[in-house]
Image (tube, rainbow, N blue to C red; front, side):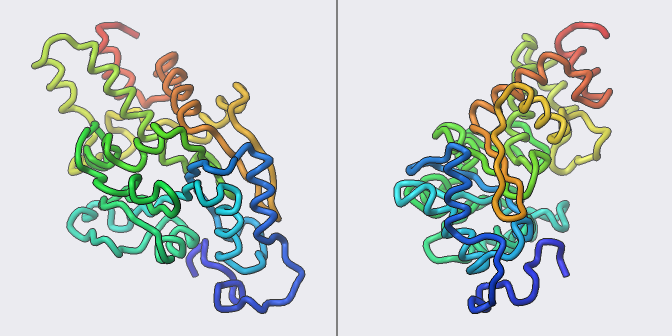
Length: 291
C-alpha cells in the first residue's frame, strides 16, 4: 500500500465511520486561521493525508476545511507532480496522468471544477477564483534554467503566478523538504550569477555546464539544489515560519514571496554551505573569485 494511501474505512465512500475522529473540517479551517490564512487568499498546500489521523468526511473533510478558510474568493492549489519514471516524463505525459505526490493531491485533482496545468513533471491543480488563471498556459513564456525543463517554472507557470499573487504555502503534516518553490529560488540564484558574466560566449558556456533535463546527473551535478529542511530551520530563526496543529498533524505556513526572497538571500550569502562542491566552484568561476 502506498505510504500516503488512506487507511481502509477512511476514504470518501465510508462517510459513516464512527467516532472518535482526530479532526474535522472546521478544525482545518481554524488551524489555517491561526496561521494567518484569510478569506480571498491563494494557498499552495503540500500534504500528508494520513498525518492528521482520522478525519471526519475523509479527504472531502480536509478539502472542505481548507476551502472554508479562504472562502469563495480564495484559491486552493496543490502540486500534482509526476516523477515516477522521471527520465521518460516528457514522453509519457498526458493531462490525466496521476499525481504521485500524495493521496490528497490525486483526490483533489479529480474533483469537479479543478483545473490542472499542462506540464510533464511539475503540474499544479487549482480550484477557486484564480484557478483557471493560475493553471492556463503553463509553459507559454518566460523559461528559466531548471533540471526539470526550462518551462517547469516559467513565468507563465502556476508557480511564478502564485509568487506574483502573494500566495501562502501550507505544509500539512509535511516540512519544507517538500517545498516545490525551492526550485524557483535555485533558478533565480543561477540566473543572478549568470547575469554578472559580461561575455555572452562565456555565459553560454557556463550555462551549458548546468544540470538540465536530459543530462540530470544527480547530486554531484552543477545546480544549487539546497537542503529544504535546513533552509526551514534558517527561515524559522528569522521568524518567517508559523506553526500550529490539527488533529495529529503539525502544520506550517510561510508567505511565498517573503520566504523565497529570504532563501535566495541566504543562498547568496554562503554558497559553500548550501551547494555541493562542483556548484560552489562553478559560482566562483562565474563570479571571478577564488575559494
